[in-house]
Length: 290
Picture 1 (cartoon, rainbow, N blue to C red):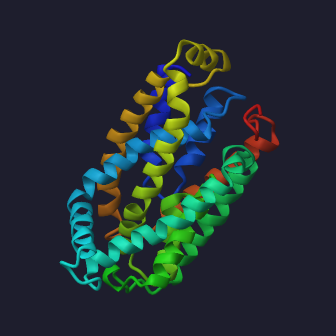
Picture 2 (picture 1 turned 90 degrees about the vertical axis):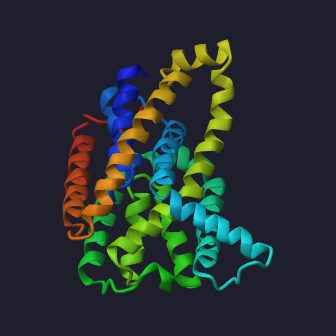
Picture 3 (picture 1 turned 30 degrees about the vertical axis):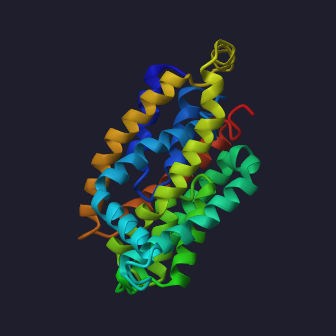
């Protein structure tokens, strides 16, 4: 993978991570279009997501530090467990369990079989339509202070669906939130907060597995021979994803104050159909050369 390709994929990651259109699907498809027959890989995708998730940390820094601080104070009995921020801390932990457990149990399928582009195209369309339905019929009255333990678990299960490229971490979680009656802003805010532990855990786990090999001469040579990204290329893509991602999250949180998700629904359906056409005509390899 070249530096230009890394910059493009970092740009794609940053543009799509916080929108309900599936960043993993876009990185997968754009990577295939730039280098036919070569999938950027689940590890590359997970690692560059550290860049966009760092943007979440900065954007929600006050909220995150307040929640962690009050949660820690509650552990030593200095605050009641009923405190809203303490409950939010526990709910984020609870909601992160499904994706963590399922990610480890089905790591092989996630890294390989589920990256079939026919699955990605189908998920883009199906979950796009679900998002549109939820946005249209849901009451959208509840705020995050009304978040219950049941809803926290359901949010977590919805986030776990994002292990399948094409579903979208934010899209799946936001859809679940809308269907449970939360406002657009509340559902999006919780989706981003809930993603922090999952994305950092996934990215650091993949980095711990991949980076040590790339630090050795043999590992770098093997990666180059296989057309896989070098460590420097991964760092470049991650930095680009961070910068672009921060700008997108600022825009997105403002946009949903007054507008529906219709534009994203239409985009997902059209993108899914275009991808299916590319697959049916043989212009794109569904397995990335695997």
